[in-house]
Image (spheres, rainbow, N blue to C red):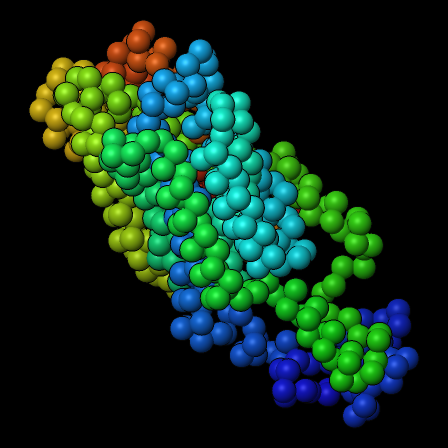
Length: 493
């Protein structure tokens, strides 16, 4: 082997038509086929072996993106009456849809952005998404009518979806499997707290100024996030890094026949087409992907359906002002914060079960679903019935705390499991999951007012609780199926 210590790569000479390798001469011939690979599993240039400080900078930047773009999903919700008044004559359903359509964009965007990150790398998608998200958000603030606001909200959601799924790919690139539970809990928390804190800031900002200032604030925050990401983000996707190493080695050796290890022999156009189709294939053919997508679709639908009742409950029933009513989302936010402890527990449990059984299985991550699947129905019942009978406002907030525990625990467990099960294709697996939950989160709340009008808060939330309980423990079947094939090795495309 010829080792280039400056670039920490290994070049293997390959005989055309054979997979065997031989020791090449000290200088590669221009006619020699060669393969550029890492210098073993402990190569310091492999992203998973980078210094912790460098990893933390990258993960921190991705967390900032995962907070910024979901913040826009609900921040405008408390100002819907202002928007309806300014755009008088517009259908109330169309006004409400300006909130939901952003979540739909979250589902559509990653279907393209996630597989593209598995060809062009994570950074190009992150940076492009940040810049376009900032532009679209500014255009929302400039919208002259409800239709233009609807269009730019959809475009902003599409562009803002990049960190939601590609972040899981970054974790798979950087973090060993036995440490991913806590990191995924931090990632999920940054995403889940944003829709909770958004209405708090939006409520007070809407009172002090008007709804357009919400988008000016989001534009400023997104611009700052874009700058931070340009400074701290580094490419982490192994195949792209090897491609760059190969280009350097071609210049150093004068050998144009060098190829990165594991490069697909398919033409670029076909490779791109297969990558773009991968999330859809996973969603249609993988039992794991289908089950997790349906479950998270239900959870997201419940959460955003629940949000439709907050204004009615805390402003009309309890007499809170618009700004104070936004503070009631903090109960769910505190519940979401508990997932940091659940994530650390998940890591310890993963290590213990791996040592006990002598094999590492992605399904160990599903055990965190048990407390989550029980907490969510309990919270829904407490919130629904106490709000219906006008019990002191603090008691419904206790219910929202348990809802937050269930919501965040489910999200973290499912995402950590998908990253572990699909590894290299984790971005596509998360995109497949994301499209179902985002569509559910965007469309299901449209039925919220009618459901609560017919069933009331008590029975309406009890129905949601029963559905959550029935679906919540279903994914545990994969944990009990000991001989389930590894999805990461049997990706359909």
